[in-house]
Image 1 (cartoon, rainbow, N blue to C red):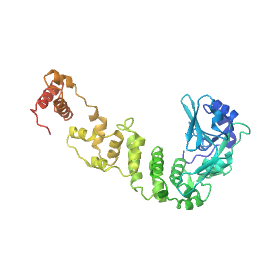
Image 2: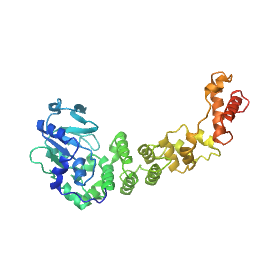
Image 3: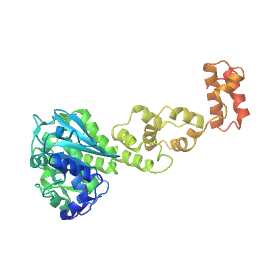
Image 4: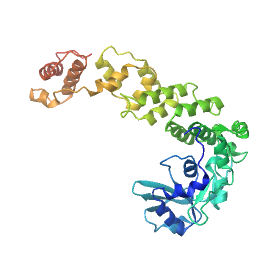
Amino acid sequence: MPGSAPIDPTRLPELVDALPGIDALRGIAEIVPAYLVGGAVRDLLLGIEGVDLDLAIDGDPEALAGAPGFELEREGLFLTGRLELGGLKIDVARTRAETYPQPGALPEVRPAPITDDLARRDFTVNAMAFPLTGKTELIDPHGGVDDLRAGVLRVLHDRSFIDDPTRALRAARYAARFGLELERDTSRLLAEADLSTVSDDRIQNELRRTAAEDDPARVLQLIVDWGVMPSLDPAAPARVAEVVRLATAPPWADWADRELAATLAIVHPLPQIRELAGATPERASQAVRLAQPWDPAQLLVARALGAEWLDRYAEEWRHVHLEITGEDLIAAGIAEGPAVGRGLEAALSGKLDGELSGREDELRVALAAARGEIPEE
């Protein structure tokens, strides 16, 4: 929702009252102090519907062991939990402070009050909380609402990108998603992000999250423009934009996994996918043999790279089936084994290429191929 003006924070109580599962959350808050935090508060302020709820509790999660729908989980040294209410899943974490033993390392954490928990977060717009009991007013110690109003993205401290360089990738996601500009000092500090200090798994996780964005190409273009990920192919934004464009309409919509395809397109696609994209099959049967081994998302990447013939495969050729089966060939005297498969493949190729029409034609060609009377291609 780029460019959206934030809602008056005094309206937060009524917005929170309307959240699904709020009664259960307030039940938890009666046991241990609890707060809506981070993105949930930000999205409520922006008027975004269907927000993902994150709950922070200032106390031991074991105190909630008997709460309906609550399940304890472990995250590193910390007990956390998940609250499941019908189809609603809410993450529950203990408020904490953190320190980074070295740049790019996972933080060392310790229990801490909500103010310390907010201070450890990435950007001011994500460092707000709303208490579910007591004085139910927005807790905004770092000026998140003001930054939302100004349309800027601001880190909380000077070492932010040094401690966790993946925040640079997150900055691109938030800037693109909400139409935010980097605050001047944040832009300067961004140059200190060194993703080489971070594990590849963490970087890949951030790129998968980028692929899930409504406009991942916009996010990637910011990453390229900012120069925070030198290994990112400068052509990735255009490639991903084409994947997203194709994925929103037939024949690819509702077949290929858009998020997976975008993820595959972010990095340099596999050489085999590039080879497939460069293929020029002369017949439908050749196209089907080329395309069948691949996942739809991989095919979508190849299509985005220029394989226009894959549109016909996705729309038409993949749906072509024979009227005969292997049982028909066996009933006609063909022994079970490779010959049956050879016969069916020959019949399908003929049907795809428009050379056969009807069950009798299919059976005739299949039997001939199974008996070795038609040479294999």
